[in-house]
Length: 224
Image (cartoon, rainbow, N blue to C red; front, side):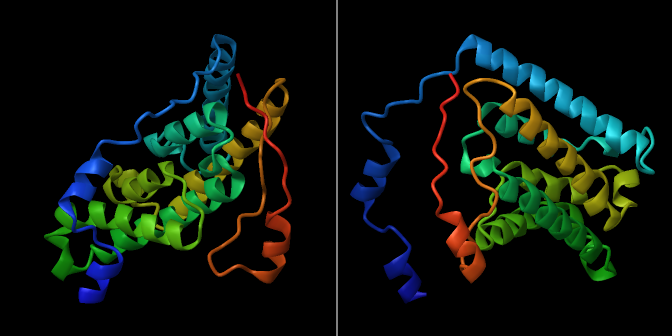
C-alpha cells in the first residue's frame, strides 16, 4: 500500500488545488459549422433507424424495447460528430461494446446466485460498469458508450435480461455492425470528413503483427 501511495496517489494539497484549476489558459476546440452539425444530425437519425430496423426484422427481438439499447445513442454522437476521436474508431467501437456486453451479462448472471441476489441492485450495476472500464482499458479499446452497454445488461427490462449471452449478439453485435457500416458509408460521402482513422488498435501487450501496422500515419481531416 505504501508503494501505491508513492507511485500513484497525489498527497500534496497545493498540487491538488493547482490541478483542480484546470488548464489555464485552455483553448477549447472551435465548434463545427452549422452545415457539418446538420450532417451529423441527419446521419445519426438514419443510422439509428437502420439499427432499429435490422434488430427488429432480422432477429427474434420483435417489437421489444431491447432492439435499441441506450448506449447506441451515445455511440452515434462519436461516430457522426466526433469522428476523429480515437474513442470513435472501429476497434474501440466493436471491442468496447462486445467486451462490455459480455462483462455485463456475466455480472447479471453472477448476481442470480442466491447468496448475492439480495445485494444485486446495490452492487451489480456499479460493478458491471467498473469491470467494463477495466477490460476496455487493458485491451486499449476504450469506448465510453460501452459502459452503458454493460450497465443495461444488468438493469435492462425482464425481456432483455432473458436474452442472457444472446444479448451480446443481438442487439449488441448486430447494432454495432450496422452503426459501423453507416459510419463508413455516410462520413466518407461528405467532403471534409474521413472515417476511420485506423482499423487496428495497438494493444497494451503489443502483438508483433499489429505493432507494425498501427504506426502508419494516415493523416487527419478536420471536419468544419
